[in-house]
Image (cartoon, rainbow, N blue to C red; front, side, top):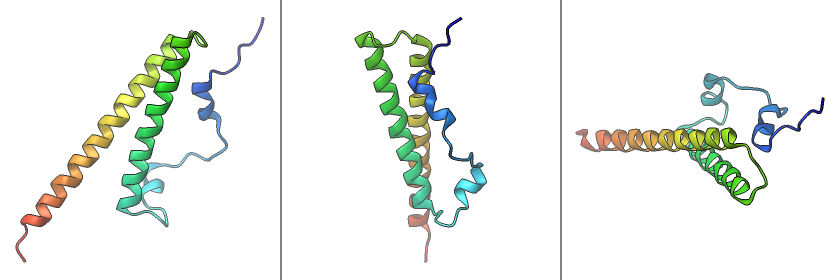
Length: 102
């Protein structure tokens, strides 16, 4: 019985970085709203790059992992939707502050 190597799109699951909860991510010492927004946009960009790389591998015949490609595409779509929702909330908050009377 041969053991197949771990697909490249799953290697990041086994990194040595400890898993942080959402409260630890958002209440860190350097945590501020700008950091949260930047982290969200960076994550969206990273998942998009992973999706494009796995699509390219499939198209070039380097990979035959169609399910991994579909999972990467779904992750990229969800990350983009999250980034758009965060952007919408920021714009709504800005508009609300601008409507306040001083």
